Length: 394
Image (cartoon, rainbow, N blue to C red):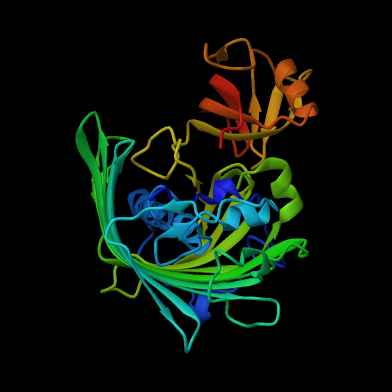
């Protein structure tokens, strides 16, 4: 299937009424720590679990929202919702295809029920997924819509739920380096799709369980126990005007999510915390009661495609501002990166100086920064050892 990435039609997710450090635990869960401090390896495995649960590439929350914005029919998914948000006429006969796709409409409930199997192999990742998806489309009178493809301009609300089981294998140089299995279930309500609505709201919950094993950045083997995780979306809002200007989602998501992770279902250990979505395709993962912060990528162009967790020396994100005179730039995640005489601009860089980057941003061009960092001292004090600046890619 040519899945509709949300990058095709949504940009500004803004979680309203929350702070990164002030969210309540899901279902009243509190952090319960094992005896003794958590090891760096344990936190790394936990960050991998949460990263896989979010990333589009590993069929996480972002991929699930892709499915939520599809328009099902008896013949297949219709490419309609993205055109609706852009106020385009679209082609209601344009279909995406999934093997082993089955469709049923239930008149009594207004539900469109889909079952399908997906097998994909691309970019060093092999995935197998069995899914059952359910949709109810409502108009502004809260009446179910029988034919959403033909009445997309009347869709105001989508109620979506999904159940999936599957496995993911990632490869480097032809060798399998990570393997995970999962069972996932989620539900979302998307409100404000009609043309006269200035924004969308998305609320919902995600639950998953599974197991993963692989090789970390230090080439050391790791494996998780049988884990379970709950993720809660708060009052998410999507600004349609922002989308019409940028036509991108992954790199426009800001705000936060709340999670409860049980790293081992046979123990009482609970890890709770928040994920701060930075607006540039990355996210900052914070564990309550621990100071270490992990950076996750929600996109499919991570420096290490086998992992959604970025290394400490990875530079990746959108540039928010440039101080040419002081020799640094700032990313949307507030990370300040210095460029000095030892910084190497990679040959493929579209911009050869901070001045060019500043002028591009001034001209409303979104610039991505990729490269390597040397961390100096504390927190946000970084120097780029090598850097590539390029215009944002969808």
